[in-house]
Each structure stands twice: as structure tokens, then as C-alpha cells.
Length: 443
Image 1 (cartoon, rainbow, N blue to C red):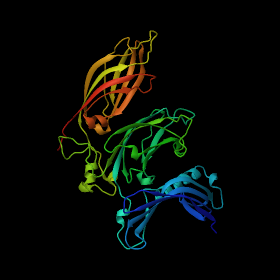
Image 2: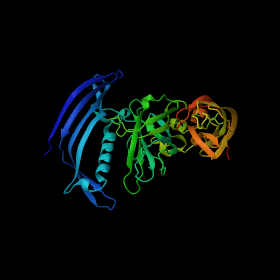
Image 3: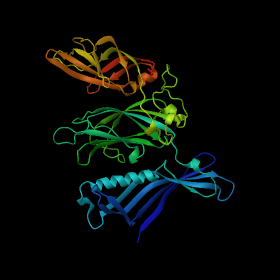
Image 4: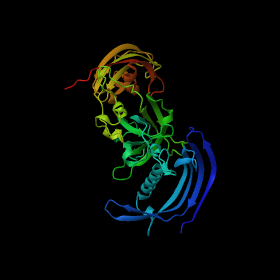
């Protein structure tokens, strides 16, 4: 016997084009259905788990499309969960207690929530034909690619009693197992630098989000969540790189979090299909920084248009980076006279190239005007780290640092800007950066 209560809280009409009617209904459902999951354990033993006492509140979107002249005046109905406001349920092992098995309750609950969210949450939609016809154009289709660079995180809350956390990240636009990306684990660090690049298929940039979760790797035990963050794709300007620092929270539904869980640094680029990519080597018209141009050609050159992310190859961008370290402003003082003896160390992480400016004595506003040239073999995946140090007779003290990718420089060709020093109470670094692309060497 299934007991349930279902009722509508509110109805609204959404403006669409002239060929459709869009309604959104806020619905509440409470019930006690008889749902039993057959969970397979690692050792192959089946574990019957019952899902009980389900309570759900959300906003459903219903689309009547296309509008036609014959009754009932529309050809098909599409429905989707536009917004999940609340989902509660309890789990119970048939003949036992699920909480008695370490880690299984949390894992099952997270898996069920993700499965429910992705199976029906917008832009996923279910199509019910009403009149005969081809309604395949209403089905979910990719509209673009989101390029994500996971650069670094800072001030992560430490989950370990001894030592520091071993953080790694999971990123997704849709919480499907085969579409979720995981970073490498950085051992014993609360300020990890990943410098990893991921791509995601986008189906609806107006409503979808990029979600990132940072975990502490606990080895054979379940990883512990440090914090999470989210970016709305509608806030990205197509074809423009956006550099963001996101504050980590415990729960995206609540957002307000008094505890400092740290921040994560991302670089984002959304490229819709059907638009020209801004990334192109002028010396090679067939070369693109990403595989987006080939994707736009509907699967040419072996690209699988149903999943262009999986079938693409990482491109190589070669060029010369000319960097002038102009000056710094308002550096923190380190000696008794209220001055410092600053210099800058320049590090290219992937290619392991290094250089440094001269030391300037007794100043908090040094002017170097020194230029350095670096041959870059893989600009897309390179990471530029500039560390400002105070020279001391017995060593050196770090004043702060700047970390950046080369994406903006490659896109714009030349950048002159002022960059804040991370890890310092004050200070900015003034730089002039120029990118000169080099032709691709072919066999």
C-alpha cells in the first residue's frame, strides 16, 4: 500500500516564442512508496535497501509545443524539474539498519540524489507526443562547450588531525558519473596548485551551472567534503575568458556559511556551437587552440559529435612569452626601518623554466623594468607563477605571489595590467606581457 499526498502550490506562465506555451508549477509531494534497491557490494553480495518516507518540493516546467490548429492545439508536451527545492527520504536495509554499515548511508544518499536530479532536472526533459509527428527537435542537444581550468585553492580548512589535508576536486555540469571530472590529489597541502584543464558539454547555458566540490582524500576510507561552490553559466560572456575566485561553502542549498572553508581559483570559457572560436594560430589556419572548430563541423576528423569532449585531443600552442616586470606597489615591510629588499622570481610550472629580477634595496615601491623572454611549447596548459621575495643576508622571505594562466595573453596578444599579491596584506605587481605565436612544426 502506498500512501501519498500531492498538491500544487503555485502556477506561473513563462514567456516563450509564439509556437509554444510554457507553464511552471510549484508542486509538493509526500508519500511512502514501496521502493527497494538491489545494491551490489564490492564482494558481489546483494544488499536490499528500502527507500521510505519521501518528501519532495520543486518547480516543474511544462512546455506545450508546437502549437497547431487542430485539437488539443499542441503537438507534444515536455515536462522537466526546473528547480528542486527540497528532497527528503530515509534509507533502510531490509532486515537491518543501513547506518550499521560504515559509509554506505552517505554514499547511497548522495548517489540517489544525483540520479534524481539528473534524470529529470532541466534541461533534461521528458517528451510525450500528443499528435502524430516527429518531435526529435525537442530532445536535449548540446549547444556548446565549457572549458575549465582548475588553477589552485587557498586556505582550505584542514580535515586531518595530523598533517594537512590531501585535497582533490570533482567538477561537473551534470552529475552523471561519466561526465564528472576529478583532479589529481595534492598531498599534505591547504594551498594546492592543480593547473588542470577540463571540458564539459553544455545543453542550456541559461540555466545550467558548473559545480565544484573539494574533498580531502582519506585513502581507503570515504573522502571527506571540504567545501563546494557553483558558477552560473549565464554569467559567462561567450568567447570571453573569466577568471574567478569562489568561496567554498558546506551546502549549496544554504550558501550562508560562517566557517572559512577556503577559496578555489578557476578560469572559465564558454564557446557556443555555431560561433567562430577566438583561438586560432594565424600561421596555421587549420589549427585551433581547442577542438571547438572541429566540433562545429559536426564530427569531422573523427570527432564524435554526440560527445566531443571524450573524442578530442589536447592541442599544442607554441609561442614566445615576453614579460616585462615593470614595478610593484605598496609591498609589506619586513625590516625594522619599515622597508624591504624585494625581487621577483618567475616560474613556468609545466616547462620548469625560471628566472628572477635584480634585488632593489630599501623600498616598498620598486621599479625593475626588466624584460624576460620564454619559449613556450604548450601555452594552453602552462602556468605562470610570480613570487615576490625580500632578500635577506641569511636567506629570503616571501612577500606574496601571483598565479595566472596564459589564456588571456594568448587571446589578446598583449596585456598590461596590475595584479594583486596573494598571501600578502598589501601589494600589487605591474606587468607587461606579450605573446608571439610560433608556427606548428609538422613532420
